[in-house]
Image (cartoon, rainbow, N blue to C red; front, side, top):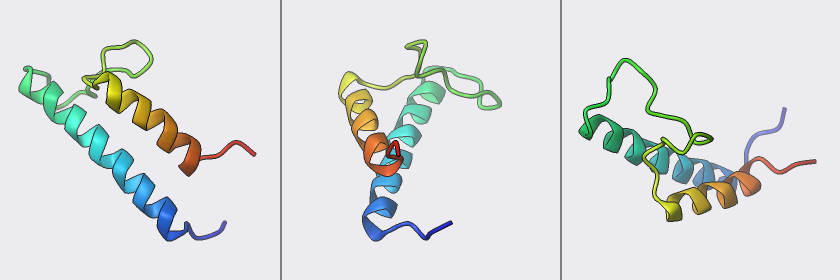
Length: 66
C-alpha cells in the first residue's frame, strides 16, 4: 500500500473537519454522545447541502474509483 500524497492528506483532513462539525451539530441538538450522529444516506446527518456537495467531491478525489 502506498503512502498518501500531501494533497490527499489535506483533502482527507478537510473531510474529517466537515464530519466533526456535523457531529457537533448532532450533539448540540441533543444527540446521544454514545451513538453515531445520523446517516448520510438517510438524510439525517446534520450536514448542510453545501457540505454534502463538498464531501462528494472530496471523496472522489481522495478515494478515486480505479
